[in-house]
Length: 254
Ligand code: SF4
Ligand code: FES
Image (tube, rainbow, N blue to C red):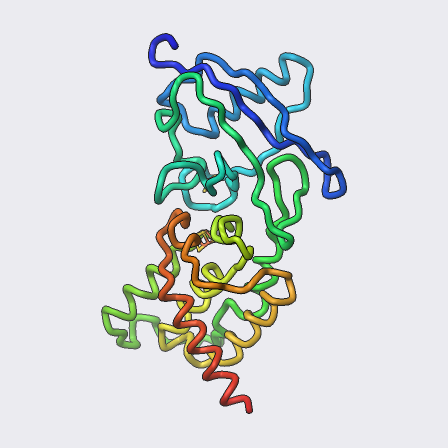
């Protein structure tokens, strides 16, 4: 090591498409600054591969500041790597040591098929949102100002906490059952905790849970790994709330 830089061995999942069985490939990457982010390190690797005439590693990224949820990487067996409360783009190389070997893989779940290398298809989440993750609002011109409806502080805080879910899919990738219940319950809670969302709450929970099952996500067995690895600290309380809402909606439906 020199000047606080790291010499690393990277074992990166390479897969040409959904049907390719894929394999881990090994790369040496030297002089990585401990001040760089994990994605900047990946950029360095790709520059090196391009200079060597090799194909760069495909990976998803957009905002690079923990907002968009696209930087899905399984790093040394943990979704978003060894830090807590951060996405891969917020992970810094100072979390690693000189001489480390780092394993970098895509999310693993039947409902998230690999498109290429580290990029997975998370459109299953979009289809779950399309099934009911919205409120129907009359935009005729007579719409009430949202702030005209009083909401108690505790409900507003819980709804806001649920709304911080960025749809990254780390909960699914972490769960041994590939369950999407932390994600789905956050998206349901952010609406059903508020009066505007309660009008459609029964239809919403039935429809979104049905779509979640259709997509092939597994069941929740209360392991709690999702909550630990979630970069936004989404609480398991949301799953309990969703289960109560689902049971109540089923009884009412008859
Ligand atoms: S619940 Fe957490 S881990 Fe799951 S999609 Fe939302 S932010 Fe990502
Ligand atoms: S690139 Fe947007 S959350 Fe990481």
